[in-house]
Image 1 (tube, rainbow, N blue to C red):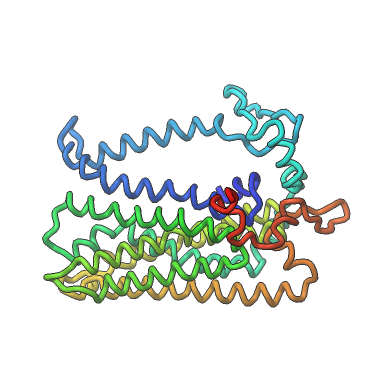
Image 2 (cartoon, helix red, strand yellow; image 1 turned 90 degrees about the vertical axis):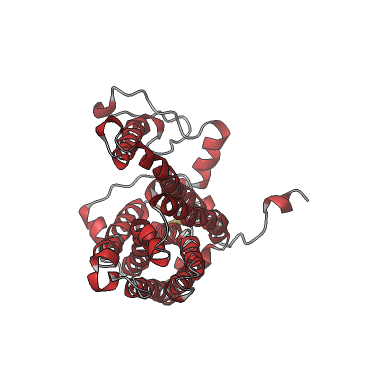
Length: 378
């Protein structure tokens, strides 16, 4: 999805859009926490348990939407006057409507020249992305935040129950939802700012990660059995910190690899970062919490070590973002012009020289807080 969005927006402006895309996961997690309380009331209906009803209905919606998207979403923007060419595999579907028409299509064509100059790619191009050192700090960044995100998603109710064993299953489901509402709020607040200050992605990534670390420490050490709600507040902090980290990580990936490797660079790097980075979710799912018997023993220190392991991988994510920032500065200082165009969209001319399109030239400077809606009204 990161690659798809870069076909319509300059990489320096995709943070907000990728963030909006990821809000689907947060809304889903929050809704599941609320709706699952209702599904538990359906136990026994039709011979099915409540969670089976939930899986059936969610699966049906996903299947219908999956087929609908084949027609709903166009493959890519088309140049003014160009008509879509269908494939024999999808001839039975009506043609997708153009993403842009009229003046909008002309403006987009002039702004994002590189989107309309498709270049053939080979396995060697994919290999060049794989061996580019820039991909690996991004993998570690993604590893940490996704590991914590999936850990909280899978074991959030388990952690809440450890802080307050008196809670019922329905109360746990209802308390799980606000974690992801905080996640959603953070995405909507922070990702637009990260676009306006797109040369400071590491800062907008690291500060929310620090909030996650603080939240995990509060969940681990604050409160008591008689006063457990401060520990639940720590989980809300974790949710808020989680929100913008994955969208910003994927946006930074697109920014870095678009200029250096083109479309194939964005596609391969996004696949590597999200694919290898998701190994963090395997660690938190199978090695921590219920998968760590000695750490799951009842008592005030229950899951303490699992929480601290997640703090550790978050520290690795912050360190990787700092290392990436320093190494990019050193590498760009030795390559004239590279630093200027690293945030925008570029395309190679027939001689292979980098040419900045209009969107890239416009984004050579950060927008900052200028041209916000309340300023435009003055």
